[in-house]
Image (cartoon, rainbow, N blue to C red; front, side):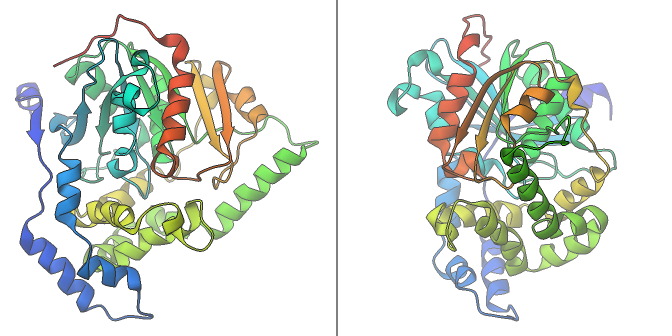
Length: 378
């Protein structure tokens, strides 16, 4: 592909639409499932859930695609009406998608209506990661976290021409956001994370808080990461299973709603069933199972060198999250940490479960950088 091909029609409008025959196929697959135990979630998905409702809700926000490094990247781009609004890149994780951040959009672009001030407004850029959702799946190896980070920098600075911008991420998105900060792109001012890549400098005499954090880490690694080991070692095997079985794909993700949301034996205490199926539907209709597993394979040996991170960083810790990082670990690993806050509400899907808490913390974390010299594209 030539440079001219890569940049032709740089940004194109996009609308989410799944053909009706694919929706009918989904319902038929659910009907034909051979069950180990009957699942009420699948019956609701087939009989009551409305994908068209989700399309209408998502398509309220402007979406586009642009070709970067050989892939068509899907992204939302929502401008605030506030004159001093600043750009923020939101990067999702697994098993989420852009769906995780949809409830954050109105809070960020219209803060006055949602308990904030006009000078706390953001223009929102919300991409689907390569191989996720409606972004094209890579057809070659090499699309690890670093290459993904470079692609998102290109989106913000070359395609959208922002000369000052912020970034937020959790889960896989936190990894990509951290890497962008390490790369020090010219326009990235500061980052906000709700998952850290911080290790203790010493554990000779761990505090009670550190012991609790280590215990949580061991439980997560030993009991909650089966998906990771099979995805990162046998990606094509799991791709065949999840791509052919709608119920298999749904339960692969629904399990994490049960374990990783703030609930007591019922994930609907944290998210509605429709919200959970919105995200599952994005995975199913975009046929993302294989490409996401291959990304996990790409990153199977990846390790962070957090000592390189000197960019200002704001941190929000959801105390019930599957990883619990003491403040001392963050201080040891992030020499320019400008904000640290804990909350006992919400869990791993912080932006989705508690958008008001995450957005409030983003506002507070970036408050010192409110400036007027932000370039906004049309």
